[in-house]
Image 1 (cartoon, rainbow, N blue to C red):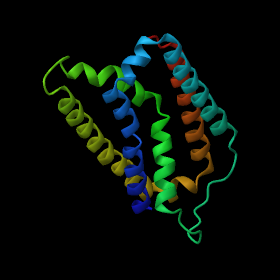
Image 2 (spheres, rainbow, N blue to C red):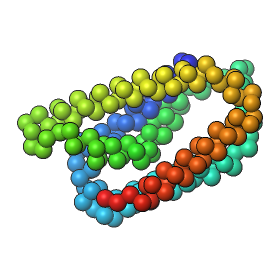
Image 3 (cartoon, one colour):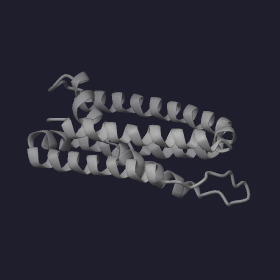
Length: 173
């Protein structure tokens, strides 16, 4: 399981690249300038977060460790992880609004600075996700064997998704 978490961390890190490309190519400025584009992206993010909340709350399945099941291929794990980060509205806000503040406008090395900061962010993301994943692999059996803990975790995640959705809905350009 620890190996799979490292593969997933790699996929999540790759999922940052489209946000980086959007920031570097000026798509971020377009979204800031276009109220309609920003509102459409924001609405999609809100719908996605609310969908995740409803899906999480509605999931009554019992989690079980199935060691005899074939592992998902690394390509599928990376693809799922990339999609999760691609749809992450926090990354959009980070790359469109927060990160550019640390790069002086019209600096001769503006692109290099943005790429360096983005690379540092991606490296930190990878390390943190690996730590989370390996930690989760260590405690997974203890959590899975306690249905009440799973139910509470699902409630916390669902509430978090709703809270993030509300916060995103209230976000303005």
